[in-house]
Length: 486
Image (cartoon, rainbow, N blue to C red):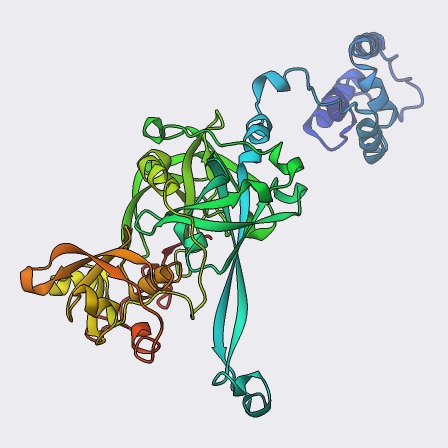
C-alpha cells in the first residue's frame, strides 16, 4: 500500500504532494533573478525517508524484504508479480493426521475366509431349433429330424458350499440357475482354479427359488478338496438397515468377484416371476452371474442368497444400487429338506417319464379371475396312459409333483426330465368336482408314445387370450422391472 500511494502520480495523494510543494515555496516567483528561492526545509522529507527505511527493514526482517523488493521493481509490476509467485513455497500435503480421520473399507480378511466356500456354476442346456435352410433340410442334418437341430446354450451363476454327506458335497444356489440344465459345471476358487467338476441337481423349490446341487466327493481333485470350506450361515432376522454387506459371485461369468455396501432395506416386497417375495435390499452391486451367490455380513456369515436386481429401460433412467437377496433364515429349513432328497440327473427324451396329458398354465392372474388354483389345468387325459391309470381327470389342476410346486406346463415338463419311465411319484391335484380341494395320487410314469410325444408338450396359458407380462414386468413400455441376474 505504501508503494502504490507513493508511486501513483495521478492520485489525489499526488495532488496533496504538489500542494505541499507550493506551500513550501510560499508563493515566491523563482524566475526573479534578484531573489533566490528560499532554501528548502528537507527535514520532514529526510525524516520520511528514514521512517520508510526503518519500516522497510522491519518488514524485511519479518517477511523477506518484500517491500524493498517491490520498490526496486516499481517500474515493472509484472516482473515483480512473476518473481514473487516463483519464490512462493507451496508446501506439502500433511499426512500425519489423515489415517486417524478417515477409514477406507477393507473387507479382504472376510473375503479371504469366505471365498473358499463360494463356487461358480455354469449350466448348459441343449435347445432344439428349426433349420430353414432348404439345402440342409434335404442333404444335411435337418432331413432326418424334421429340420430340427440341437444348440448348446450356457449361462453363468453362483452358489456356496453348505454341507456334505458321506459321498457328496452340497451346494446352495437359486432354482432358476439350474432349472432345466442338461449339464452343470462347478468351479472352485474363482479364477485361481480353471478346473471344473460335474454337478447334479439334488433338490429344488421353485416357489422359494432355492436349489441344492451335489458334487461327488471322489470327483473333486485332492488339491481342491483340501482348500474348500463350508459356509457359515448367519441369522438374517437380526439384520438392521445400515449393516455392512458383502456380495461374492460369478459376476458376468468372469469368475468370482466381490462387491460391498450396506443393507438398504429389510423385508422389501418384490414381485419376481409372478411371485411376491420379501427380500433383503442392498446397495452392494448384484450383476449377471451373481444369482445363487452369498451375501455376507461383516463377520463373514451368509445372511442371504443373491437373487435379483432392479433394472430400468424407461424414463426413470439408470438404476444404481438396488440388489436383492433371499434372507437365509427364511429358507434354512427348506435347505435342510432339499439336502435329503435323491440326487437326480436329466434323462433323454426316450427314457424320461411321461404323465400322458395335455395341459394349460394357470398363472396368478388367471387364478384370481377364475378362482382356479395356480398350476397346470389338465385339458386332456390320454387313454391308457399313466395319468389315466392313476385317476387324474380332465379339468383337474396339477399343483405339485414329488413335493415340488408346479406352477406352469413348462415347469411340469422340465421336472419330469429328471424322472425315468417306470418310476412312481406322488402328484397333488385339485379337482373341480370337489371345489378344487387337493388330493394326492400315486402315478407310475410311462414311456413316450404317439400320444404323449405331442400333446403333453402343449403349453397354452389359461388366460382367455389376454396377454399378461411374464412376471418380470413389461419391458415393451419402457418401465422399470425386476430381473434375475443369473
